[in-house]
Length: 160
Ligand code: HEC
Image 1: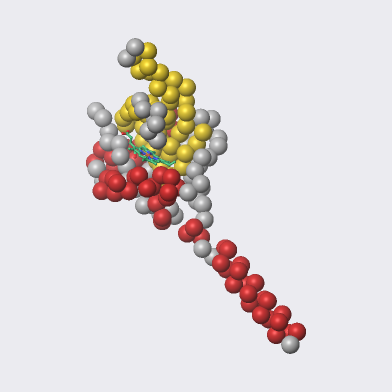
Image 2: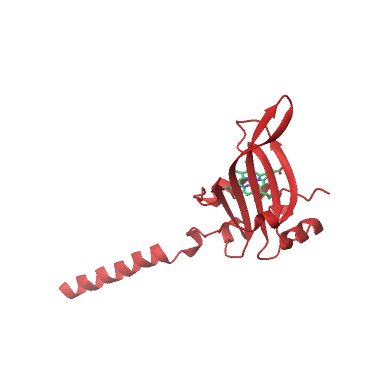
């Protein structure tokens, strides 16, 4: 009887272990901060003036060479493509709007490991670029970007 109990406990234990470790699709995938992004090409800028808008800020979008090529050709982005958006505060002095202090970064990295979010890793970083801000990229990021699924989930198009 004791042996049987031990066996049952062992089987249950394996079950729990598999449950916890076996579902890699739900694990948070890591997007690292692209230190070299200021050498990338500027894609476009947008000012969202309304403080209540979740996208409030002076947003500047940069793409690395892989992403830029796909963006300009309106093609699917190849693996390794990277896009960064930098949000600055909007300073309005009598209708002249300039960039204030940096608020945060948003980053997209194309990699097939990010199965739940269209093959893109999404992450936001604080103004220092050191602290990640996203817990659930699907709910906090991808939910909006699905509306541009026909553009491989990227809103911005290159402004000449
Ligand atoms: C409320 C909807 C919404 C949410 C939530 C959202 N985004 Fe976006 N994102 C947008 C829109 C709209 C743009 C384009 C803004 C513009 O017009 O330049 C954009 C632009 C971007 C860009 C520049 C490339 C592109 O698609 O134009 C990146 C990178 C980005 N978002 C990453 C993120 C990340 C990371 C998160 C989650 C932390 C996130 N976004 C959450 C709507 C959203």
